[in-house]
Image (cartoon, rainbow, N blue to C red; front, top):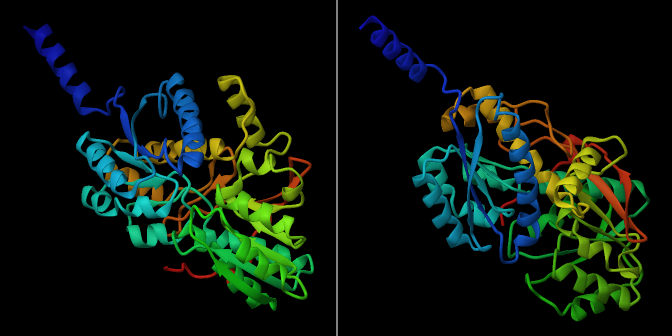
Length: 384
């Protein structure tokens, strides 16, 4: 009888103490098909590498395995909201949202109502957590930060006149407006701007306007991405425009490096550079070991970073409770990712992390620099 009582007591104690086999359920609602799959698909590759690495070591803190519950939102805002609700109903503790603020924000009511922390894979609009509320986080350098870095670089290189191309269709594609704001504050002169529609293939009218300017702008900045950016750049160079072109992280893809002569000298901001001996170089080596092919985009490592942030938050929280993880995430400092050190403490959900400037040189990456932006120049988040 005493032995039975002791067994029962021990079992009860085990239930009351932190569950060593407790599983962290992470709901992944991302675009594995559609236009955003160019970014989300490589991100999820990095997510899987990180999760496998953690689970092989026994889980977070050696005791808490991670379970991924994955749904394809097909690059659609309405489908994102549906998938997020399904994942909430399945009892996840953390949500991972698509690589764009607009579909991520489509789920903000569900996220805040469920009080579950949600992190976009690689949305960079600083309006994401501002509009999405205290449970919404980003995992990428903000548009306004990237634009400040690129505008300061252009100014320091002696570029005095500029031109921007942006689209009002999404938060991300309005990034050049931040660039223009900073460039103007530095003393530069914007010679003009144009807008386009996402999915637009004919840029002849826009390119004609730019080509007719005399003198030509020193720098042209755009956050257009595939398939729009290659079409614009090819048309621009075919028209004889030789101005420096600056892009943003949306063109950190194999397509950009396969464009040949039109892309030569192109500069863009992104989340990291694989310098010899760096954490990103180590990640890329592991990626190749796991997949059998070299990584062709920083978005693989960005997915790894995302899981390292979740790991650090869950470990600090000491539980799978969503509220505890949310609070821990908001106070994270100095989390070492594959691309850089990441901090959320003292921010409103946008991470403080390094921005790298990359130049395309003979189809390869060349590091231009990893400058810190001047804080006073960073524009306030801009609503469309």
